[in-house]
Length: 88
Image (cartoon, rainbow, N blue to C red; front, top):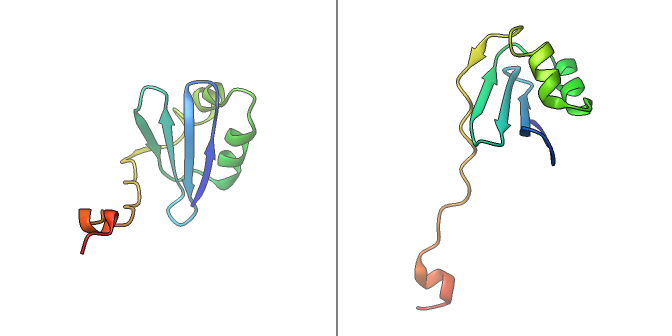
C-alpha cells in the first residue's frame, strides 16, 4: 500500500492500494473519503500536486466511484499491565 502525508491543506493523508486500486483520503476534519478504480498515475499526481485538495476536486471527486474506506491495520495487541511494568 502506498501512503503520502501532507503537512498543509485540507487533505492530511492519502493511501492507495495497488491490489484494489482504492484511494482513501484522510481530511483535516477527521473524515475519510474513498474511491475505487483509481489508477496509480492519478495517485502519483495527487501526491505531487501543489494543492492536493484542488486536484481531488478537479480530477477525482466526480471521476471515480465512491467506496467504503479501508479499516486501518490493527497494531500489536495491548500488553498486560504486568508485562509493561515487569511484574511477575
